[in-house]
Image 1 (cartoon, rainbow, N blue to C red):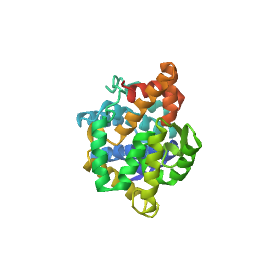
Image 2: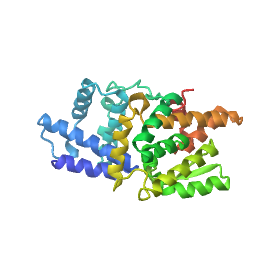
Image 3: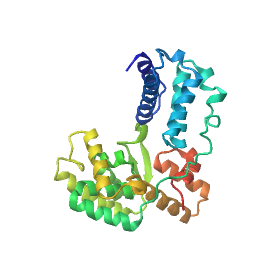
Image 4: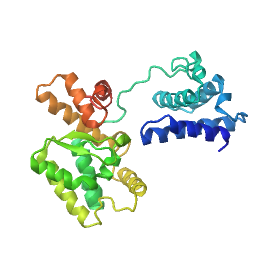
Length: 290
């Protein structure tokens, strides 16, 4: 990595955000740096970046068939880094708006689907034969609306969750593996099913060094989770995130049945998912296609 790449990486870190956001931003600026080097563009500092350099990068990415939503996110990262470096004039240049770059009009509607009950049952049966710990983590993801990393790290909260269910609590606090390290509360939709799954998960964990995914560190556990997910049929529209989609739709129905307005429901589900109550419209678009 040259001087430009190093400077952009440092700026990407200083822009802030969750660990995942920062990581994604670093990958984006490194890709931009590689693009410039491949074209033999002699730039050493962010101060030397011109509007045309970014235009050319986005046009090349579009030609590669990269989606508009992805490129909107890439532009947001590049703008953040430019702003951080004091290059506001370039970041806000009229030629670098999403519309000028041909990136406007992209839909935020969910590209994946909620997993069907039939496909979920099939996947779970295969997982139980292959690896009971993986199956237990998948069940928790489906019953609690967990993200992949939350499901993998859920073993650290099993006893706390079991006590909460036994107390009659209506919510469970998700602490480990959350986006940005922000704890969130998820509503219990079926306490009987959750209790049964927690009992099973605790039994599995006790038999394998207090782990559901029996790997020495988080990275290898996450790699295993993603690889096995593909092998058992959680791929394409039915990626592991489709379990969360299904939970979100159950939660929407749960709150609607209690008489809340659709706006209130979406705000509550957004909170349960860890998005914040102001992202109800986002939840409706991405998760709530019911």
